[in-house]
Amino acid sequence: MAERLEAHDATPSTVKQIGGVLGALAKMPLDLVRGEKAGRNARDGYATEHLEIASYELLRRIAQKAGDEATAQAAQEIIAEEQAMAKVIEDHWDRIAELSLQEEGVTV
Figure 1 (cartoon, helix red, strand yellow):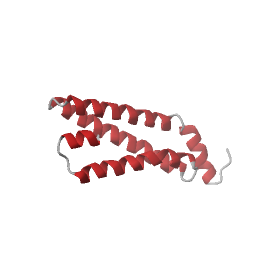
Figure 2 (cartoon, one colour):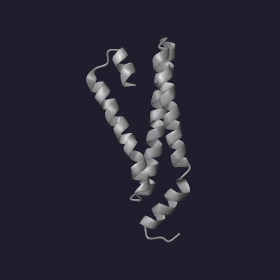
Figure 3 (cartoon, rainbow, N blue to C red):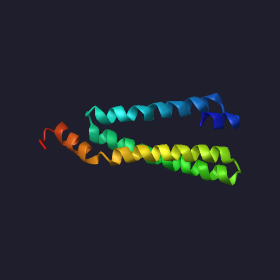
């Protein structure tokens, strides 16, 4: 996405901000496996993934309407990545529930 921002003369601060968001998202899988506040981390991660999907879906549609197929394609690729990460969380809801109960001292 940084390449697409630069193609549209975006400011460097915009590119840095995107990088910061991506860095925070990259750390999310570690939050899920460490067990500490598992439910909260999973909930927040799942919500974040869907906010990202919505943002990139809007960007994709705007880019298509503006005739910018390169940006539309880049957004579509990111949407697929975000959907895959949301699916990882979905596939682990039962384990996350167990970890949440364990955090409260409930044996499962």
